[in-house]
Amino acid sequence: MKKVVVLTGAGISAESGLKTFRDSDGLWEGFDVTEVATPQAWTKNRKLVLEFYNERRKQAMSAEPNTGHLALAALQDEFNVSIITQNVDSLHEAAGSKQVMHLHGQLNKSRSTMDPTLVYDVDGWELMEGDTCERGSQLRPHIVWFGEAVPMMEPAIEQTIQADIFIVAGTSLVVYPAAGLLDFVPANTPKYIVNPQIPEVRSAENMYFYEETATSGLQKVRDHIIENHL
Image 1 (cartoon, one colour):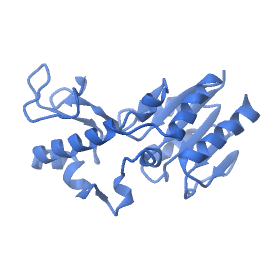
Image 2 (image 1 turned 90 degrees about the vertical axis):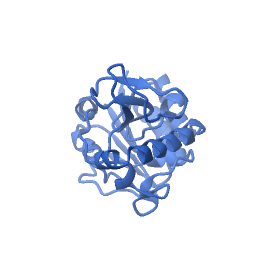
Image 3 (image 1 turned 180 degrees about the vertical axis):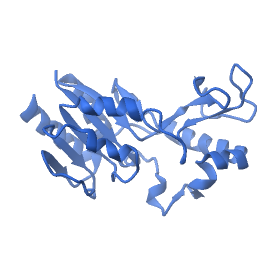
């Protein structure tokens, strides 16, 4: 069974109603990202950061997978599909995708500020001041903030190197290090790029471009892959 590796970004979640800060000149739901999505913000105003992510979590819980998510899940019928997502929601899982790697963390989880290996499911949508890990340390959102390392990059690179087919959907490929994954795709591997604005890429070798949204483009990609690579 051929291995399909997919890199998804904010565009696919936006089509399910989840907003991205890049849609509004660096503002995310009215907040500058430096106020709510950096280690400095956590130190400066923990209450604000918790409230911000509580609202994002509440919003995400009401969102439903769209046809883009479902098209990727359906690919599992014919291929070994690994999804690498920059998104922190769980819409891929809700659509039925079995192998999902979250580069930037997960909204529905929290982690210890003392020991980052202690990760917990958030019960409901609220994470509050005073919620602590088993060692008594305050819990924080399980999110990779701006300025923090991306621990899942190495596993993502390992998956990418193994790809027989590589798909990029809903991302402008400007956020690093995730955007650099394209450089690790084997040269002879077919690469599909789906985005309303096609990003600049260094090489057009074995590349197929779909200048449209993830909801419509991924269904076409699925049909093309099944027809040509099954």
